[in-house]
Every structure is written in structure tokens, then in C-alpha cells.
Image 1 (tube, rainbow, N blue to C red):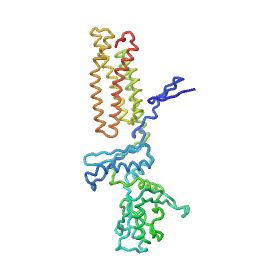
Image 2 (image 1 turned 90 degrees about the horizontal axis):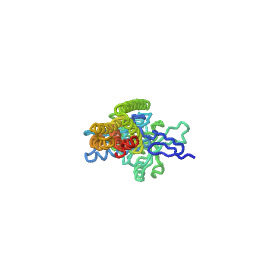
Image 3 (image 1 turned 60 degrees about the horizontal axis):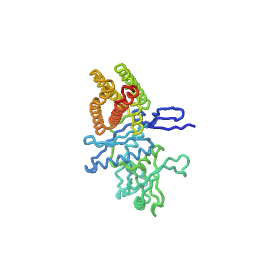
Image 4 (image 1 turned 45 degrees about the vertical axis):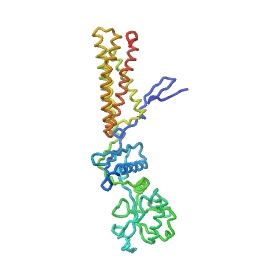
Amino acid sequence: MNVDTRVGGYFFNLFDGRVRLDLSEIKKGLDIKGGVKVVLKADMSKIEEKDRDSALESAKAVISRRVDLLGVSEPVIQTSKVGSDYRIIVELSGVSDVSEALSQIGQTAQLTFKKLKEDVGYDPNKFNEYFVSKDVWEDTSVTGGDLKGADVVFDQNSGTGAGPQIRLKFTNEGRDKFSEVAKANINKPIAIFLDEGSTPISMPLVNSDLAGGLTSDPVITGNFTVEEANRLSISLRAGALPVPVEVIEQRTVGATLGQESVRRSIIAGVVGILIVALFMVVSYGKLGFIADLALVIYTLLVISVFKIVPVVMTLPGIAGFILSIGMAVDANILIFERIREEIEWGKPFNLALKLGFERAWPSIKDSNFASFLTSAVLFHFGTGMVRGFALTLAIGVAVSMFTAVFITRTLINVFYEEKARHI
């Protein structure tokens, strides 16, 4: 019988003694697993100053719903203000069709229902002219805000070649509004415009069946492909953006490129750690070997914290982690140099160890506090990858203080059992 368990990202088998590090659950950032990053600028020219922050948050909520309907896993959607610009930052991992994602995210998706102007009248022979002339239409009381849903359907009575349609689901108030407009325009067209386009996306005729009101969900018919119909229905279900947005930055990262960057970063980190480990052994002998063991424990602890928090690992985050490894070794160097000084001053070994830890602690504390404060500032004022770097560095600094003092002290007690009995 086997009893397996996981603790902080490590897999333990309690009977055969196997211990295995599982890195699969560490969340990976966009620059590692690939995807697209889009920065959108919101047009606030028609929004009052006091309402702009709430409008930006509303736009973020709409985009979040659209992304959820796209099925993208673990998207990152943030808002920021740069000068007078209001921005929405969207990171979508694993997206293959970038153009479709951009179209889905940035489309305002505001439906308007228009009727022919009273002075225009309706002539069936001019149907095509109405379609290309926006000036002949005027607004009705029905808008996209009266919708509660939209689905893609196919007309089962039109044969196998029937194209997709979009079935609109109105709110109760919206159904009443649409019924009033329909009853006033029997045998006339109603034009449905998307985002105030120059031509309607559909221009259905109101048949006489609607004289008694709306009895079923109306459908938008048009020359849609299946992809276009799905995209429009998603936008309508998620809601219209309260403000227009435009793409001001786009960056696409392939998964292969991200994995190659990770591979090179890991190689650089391993080489750096090996050089540091060799330096510690050459410079401090047995104490250096103890510091190397503490460094291994430090690395395992930090990876565990990354999984527990959890930390989204990016390339700058890996850089922050590697930097924190150097800082962890630096604390051991301070301790060992103090121990050397105490021995040179004639102190017995056990007392030199005790005083070395005590007198190195203020320097370790101050330097790590400064690094932690810097990380906090970067995390607070930075965005995206800068915050990832700051977070991994801060975690590394916190863990390094623990390992440099407590883990190293414990290992010295083990390796120098007699001499270090009292430290």
C-alpha cells in the first residue's frame, strides 16, 4: 500500500521514501507560455471627469465577460491611468487567433434599432437604396441595453445551405418597446446597426404577424459566417462597452519562444549557482559547504512559496528569484566573515560562532529591509512584469533571512556538534 501526499509542491511517498519536486502547478506568465498582450486606450472625451474611473471599470468588466465567453484560461485584465490616458491592459495566454481576439475585445458592440424617417416613407423598390443610405434612418426607443442575451441559431426550414442567424432575447421592458416599434412599422423595414456603422447589419421587414405584439424572440439575419455570428453573439451577451476603445499596443509571444527563454534563464541560473557554490567552498571550506546546503534548502523553500501563494512566474520573476539567491549567499558571507574576525581576535571557536551570528545580524537585517522596501515600491508603482520581478524578489528576501540565520545555524550545530554546542 502506498500513501502519497503533496506539501508545498513536493510529492512524497511515505513508504518507499520517494520525494519529487512537481513544477507543473506553478503558474506561468504570458512571456513563458505564449499569448497576446493588448493595451487599449479608452476614449473618455464624452464622459464627465467624475464618471471616468467608473466608466473604465465598467469597460473592464465587459471585456472580462467577453474573455470568459471566449474560453481563455486565467486571463489578466488590469486598468491603469497614464497621464490623461485611461487604459485597459489585457493578457491572454494560449490564444492562437490573435485577430479574432482583438476584434472580440475591442468591439464596442452597441446595437441600435432604427426606423425610416417619417418624411422618407417606404417604397419596396428602393429597398437597396435604404440599405446603403444611413441618412434615411432615425433612432427608436429600442437599444442594445434592452437585450438580456443572444444566441446563434440556424433556420431549420431553409435547407442545408442556411446561414447562421442571431436570436435576440429581450428583457420584459425591451419586448414591450420592440413590440410598440414593430406595430408602428408593419410591412416596413427596421434597420439594426452595430456600433453606428455606415450600413445596417440586418434590415428585416416587419410582417403583419407582429401587429399583436412580440410573441417569440426575433432573429437577426444577414450574410454572417459562423465565426462572425459567434463573435457578435458573444459581444451582445457580454454587453456593450460604455466607451470606445482603440488598440495602442499589441505584443504576441509564441510558446516556443517563451520556453526557449526559460531554458536559457534556467541555464544561466544554474551556472551562476554552481559558481557561487564553488566560491563558497573555496573561500570558507566546511562552512562554505554548509552555506551551499542552506542554499539548496532556500531554493526548495522559495519554490514551495511560489506554488502556495501562488506566484505567476515570468521571465523578470525568474530574474528576481536568481537575484535573491545571490542575496541569500551574501548573508552567509557576512556571518562567516564575522566568525573569521572573532577567531583572529583569539576567541574560541564556539564563542566566535555565537558572536559571528549576533554581530552580523544587524547588517543582514538592514540590507534585506532595504531590498524588501525597494521591492514594495516597485510592486506598488510598477505594472505587469515589473510587479512580478518585485514579488519574487520580496519573497526571496524574506526566505533568505530565515535560511541565512536559522537554517545555517542549525546546520552548523549538526556539523560542528561539539564546538557549536552553545550557539
